[in-house]
Image (cartoon, rainbow, N blue to C red; front, side, top):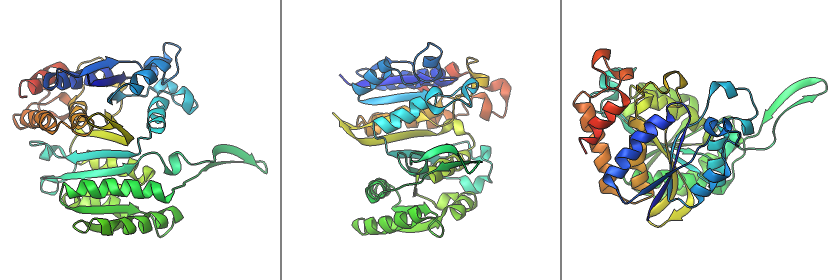
Length: 356
């Protein structure tokens, strides 16, 4: 029996995750989905953000379907006491080092982008972000007082093997796409970026059919809004990837349409263990109102099928159903030009499920 750990999280997480589970079980009724609380939902019950029950469930699962975590009342607390710690712990403890964020403009959403439609028409790129190294995980990381002056330090550290393995994920992804990798760094300033570029160049000859280009991160940010359709696979370190993937996401017209996969070293029966989540956040202001866009969660379920269950036909089946729904004018309120015709979360889910 294939088992998926479902961690709905906070805000709109439970609503959109419910939609994703519905599609997942519609195409794969043999998959068992077991749920546990994490994040703010766990903190509200006096538990840790990533409780032991959730950890045990993930340990025995083939994959994790994640909602989102984070609530404003926990802002300012130490990381270990915030809902976001659940995601930090999952990435760290399961060595989920490769974050894949496909960025596509769905049919009918070209005019919803902040850019001119002709710039984003056909946009289809993949951001490959290194997820367990760099400045987010480096030590020391602290606030302190030195000679009576407050200061703070965050340490950026990368080791060659960390760079090599994420570079190979990018090159292998490009082999199944348009065979172009853009590596983003800041090698004119940062020693970590000089190592990054050297390792990427050392890996490149193993993939002779893949074109490689290097961009400094500031130039990459500019080119993403200047010529986004020219990118294929972008690979970069943790902090740069965090920023650039959100910039790329908004080019599609709605961050609510963007899924992600975080993969690690662990293998399961049919693929790689991974965590799959929408990137839009918890949106607590609309939680419980049945208006959230579940597209990203649905497409995250498709990625789960593709990478952890090696089920390409059913992954494509979900993606085609979503595309057909958008092509037919199906919309939730945040991207509908006519709010009177906008569908609720449940109605949108019904519309996609009917197109499977």
